[in-house]
Image (cartoon, rainbow, N blue to C red; front, side, top):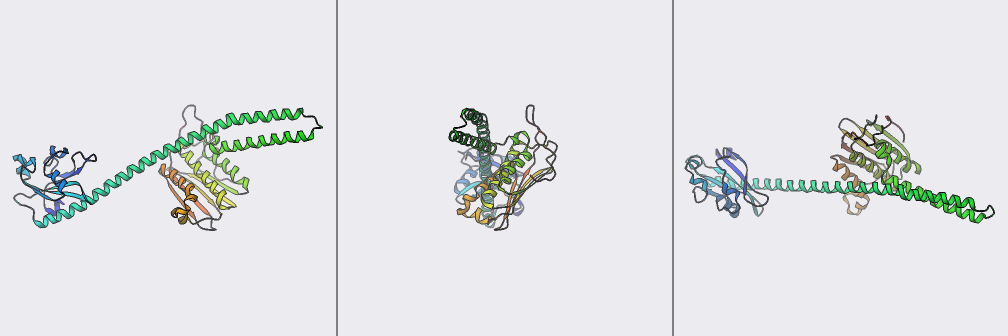
Length: 381
């Protein structure tokens, strides 16, 4: 702007977020010259504040307009200046002051140029403010979501522990008591014996269901042995038991290497959700799961040869959002950790899900579980 107008001094004031006065944001040869106490006051009646109200470019050449012009030394240095509103839509976001050349005044063409530049600068300022507000809201949303996920994981731990310690032990004791009753039944009472055995089988099945639920809520292997062992056990119990062939490949997580707990938890939940989707929707026969860590990133990939789906239809069609909630959850978990999420699929062509997350090492403190993960290069789970 100074080059276009051949001016030697200028500055930009922007309205403070709380609407309490103006704040100098940038300037050239004017950090002292244009610094005015009145600009910081919301009650000031100087030229800058008047231009903010009228949203019209003004020529400032008198002390009644700007108190700085009452200073002879300042007047000899600047003399006069144009005050240009930085407008966006129906409001002014600040002003831009451009000093006149010595002994010269701006022309009508200059003022038309000022109005045009002021409008474009105002739009840029508005976009910057909106971008900042959107980023702050996104950061806040991310923090809140992270808090919700953390609270959810803690609640999962608590429920899993209570089911194991209380309900599990109670049912185990019940089975032992039923077996004692079974031993007291006379051999000739075959019908009663069958009923007792049936009740015992119901209790045993309930105990097994609780153990499975406890594992799904929070597998102990994740805390004790780490991510590789937890995923290996989960896919074995949930995919292979349904006749699905699984290939599990792990690289870079050997020799007891552990990741930060939030990363291990997130990756386990991501693979868990992908596994559940395969069981519910894919009708797959073969699944490949990869977990590869290098110096700066860990990549989790889950691929199946199932029915596949139209990715755009599921994510962009409101009717398909119910089906995409799990995938959106995967996307959010990856995003919270600064990672990326990609999914490739086509009908009758299988699905491939890839998550990449920046790597954070984890050194367990005193009393923390730090069991070494068995060396794994490539294996079938």
